[in-house]
Amino acid sequence: MTGENILELKGISVHYHGVKALDGVNIALKRGEIVALMGPNGAGKSTVLKSVFGIAQLDSGEVFYKGRPITPVVHEMAGLGVVLVPQGRRVFTRLTIEENLEIGGFSIRDRNGLGKRIDGVLDTFPVLKKKRKSRARALSGGEQQMLAIARGLVAGPEALLLDEPSLGLSPRIVKEVFAKIKEINVAHGTSIMVVEHNIKSLLEFVDRAYVLDKGKVVAEGAPGKLIEGGILEKVFLGKLQAGAG
Ligand SMILES: Nc1ncnc2c1ncn2[C@@H]1O[C@H](COP(=O)(O)OP(=O)(O)OP(=O)(O)O)[C@@H](O)[C@H]1O
Ligand SMILES: [Mg+2]
Picture 1 (tube, rainbow, N blue to C red):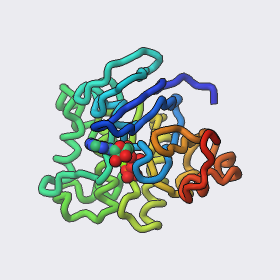
Picture 2 (cartoon, rainbow, N blue to C red; picture 1 turned 180 degrees about the vertical axis):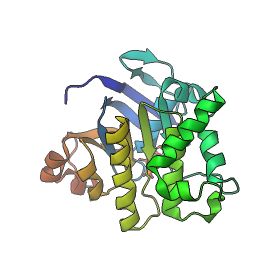
Picture 3 (cartoon, rainbow, N blue to C red; picture 1 turned 90 degrees about the vertical axis):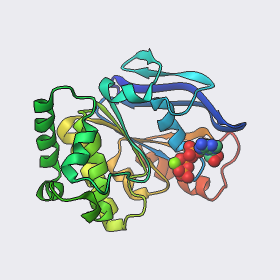
């Protein structure tokens, strides 16, 4: 792929209380692609997403949005066109599905426009559409994850960042969530960066993947190349040679 970069992280380093979480990381998301960030617990995957959002403070490096350097500020990102769906599907269980979606449209001033956006998003999620007036607590785990993603889409993002959407879901439901992510990508041209721990089935849905380990990118490329090289096994079994990749 040779498309324009929607997002680019160049030389990003982040630490928390003296612990280095990211060490000179370079990652790009091109227009229209789905990119996976994979790696073991503590590799720095969530911190990559947080640094795009201004939630993690950068020691060094720069974030570019459509080729321009930006200073990420968390509440401004949706207006810019970048939405984060954080780890742990935090939907508001006491609110209805529709009310949850309204919250996702906080950056939209035009309230009529917001209603149309919500209708449009619900067309992509028939299960949620049927239950739009029900409280979110009545949804299954998989449906709540769908709602968390749907809420992110209300803002009409160009770039959607998803942190471990499979967490706590059964393999069958995980497949459904991944298929929905692909559907969003194809139908709306949304560029998507998705963090997953070690789910090979994700690779069939993505254009490229980065493998992180201990705050560094240790491999990058098309899924086929990464599977052939056995890089995921090496990283997860702790058998990666220093400097490899
Ligand atoms: N708020 C924080 N305070 C201190 N250390 C943190 C904080 N957040 C993350 N870390 C540390 O930074 C490193 C990277 O964490 P990060 O959450 O980015 O990893 P991850 O790859 O998303 O892991 P997981 O798969 O468990 O979600 C880890 O060593 C983690 O313990
Ligand atoms: Mg994480």
